[in-house]
Each structure stands twice: as structure tokens, then as C-alpha cells.
Length: 264
Image (cartoon, rainbow, N blue to C red; front, side, top):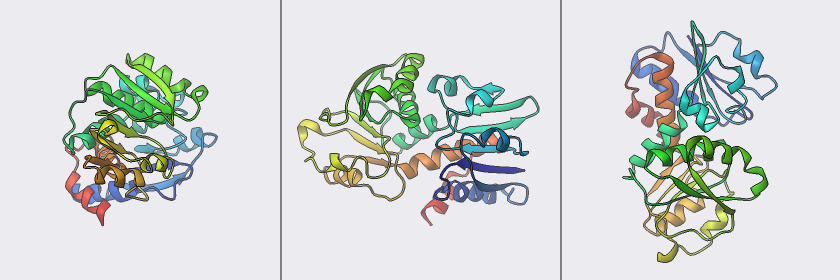
């Protein structure tokens, strides 16, 4: 059975480390393979037809894949992106495991509910963050962006999810007590770390989706202020665990072995 992660660029991806560790722990390493495939939106239709059992998708493919699928789970449709494709007799099935991955990563630092939240960024991962916040019981979130004109996809996802969004410039001061989720790429949130984190603007917890390089300056500033921090590595681990379950049909995924492989 063949599986892979698709994206462009893809050389940095740690998904093969996680999936191969899972196959080894499940005793199916001789039956399943997992590779990296450089693939952009233009190549995606052709690559999907290469006889896979399952695919992981990263940027820029999570939205582009939706019209190429035969079945899309409700969550992926609401978020507006699928990061997982499972191939079955009745066609291609699309799922979003970023959302349960975020929920599990936050639970790992003791966050199972929040009174308020702020998201940095408005891309596909920010849309997944909105869905995760809904699962934590929130109905609204503040979203800080560089360019409000480019937040259309996020606002559309918010409407589908039934979430209200307070869209503000990225330079806006953080709100005290919010759960902070940064979906910005490496280095893009560094300027926030240069501000002193004081009691009047201290988040209750931080999820920074960057996993390399780690720790980010934002994560270090939060830790210094005593704020619990979940990393992009935690998110990567838990979303991959759900992918393994969906693709192989084996549950639960061997999270401990996958975590050890990621750390090694």
C-alpha cells in the first residue's frame, strides 16, 4: 500500500518520519510505504491518479484538492480544506485532521476550554483553528492579519462554521487571557516576542504551529512569562496520528512511538 505527503516545497516535511514509525509499531512496515512528492496545484490532478492508498496534503493543496474529491467530510467542507485523502472503492475521501490535531495538542497542555481566543494569520491553518475553537466552546475569535483584503477564505469558513470573527491588523495588541494560536510561518510572529508580555496582555496559552525551527521567539517569550505552550510538532504528531488511523484502518495510532521518532 502506497502513501505519501504532497506539497510544494516538500523537502522539509517530517510526515514520513511519523508515518513510517507508525507502520513499524503497527507491524505493517512491510505492507505500507510513505514518501514525499513535490506537487503544486497544477500537478495535483495527475498525481492523485497514481494509485495511492492515502495522501497527506500540505500547502498549497488543502483547498485545491476539494473539487477533485468524490466525498468530503462535513468538517473539511466547513473549514474549506482537506489535508488527508483516503482512496476507497467508492472514490476519493477528503478529511481534515488539522482540527482534531489542534484540539489534542491543546489538551496536552491542559487547554480544553477557553473564554476568548486570538488567531494570528488567515490561511488554511487559521480556518482549521476556528473550527478547533468552536470545539472548545467558543462562538467568536479575534483574528489579526497583515492584509484584511486577503481574508476572504477565512471569513467564508467562519460563516460555514457559525463563528463570528473580529478582523484586525496584525499590529493590534493582544488581549489578556485569550488563547493565542499563531498560524504564521517561521519568523513572521517574531515582532510580537519583542513586546513585553505583561499581565494586561498575557495569553492563557499559546499554540504556535511552526515546528522548525523550534522554539520560535514567540514561544520562548511565552514560556518566560509562564504561559503554557504547544508547538507545531505537537500539532504535526496528532494530525498525523489521525491520518494513520484513517488510511490504514488501524486504531488507535501508536502516538508514543510516533512522538519518539519525531524527537529522535
